[in-house]
Length: 183
Image (cartoon, rainbow, N blue to C red; front, side, top):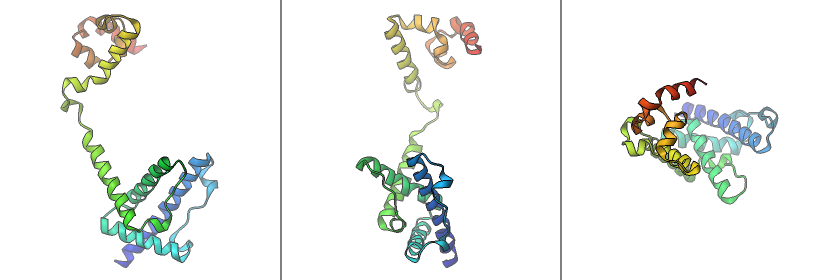
């Protein structure tokens, strides 16, 4: 167990410093290699090393991948940065706390919700499946002050083949659509 915790702590330390490097490079538009060197667990001071061991304990207990754990921490702090309108990053001492566990669990819950919301196109009913292209059709027809059928027959390249079939104009516009798709 102690060996596993040291291994995870070392990985968290490297990932943490890489994430800080990346955030600094993004914030300053500088090269990430010039910003700061990546550090290993043996290169940090004793309180920081202790903080990474506490974070490793959290990772092991939550059965979390260290990379995902760090991504969750930085993601939640990034949201706080946007809310407070100032740049905030987690410190190593923040990674092993109860709040860090909560941040990770919230991140996992959000990821699961996001994945659950994605559904296959075939699983959607026609109204939901063609929602974007219907809006696009209505928008073009309104801007050009023309009938939607005229827009579909004169500008078929703006829409997908399946949408044109759904609207019942594919037989009329198939040659024009294929020609314009090649161009």
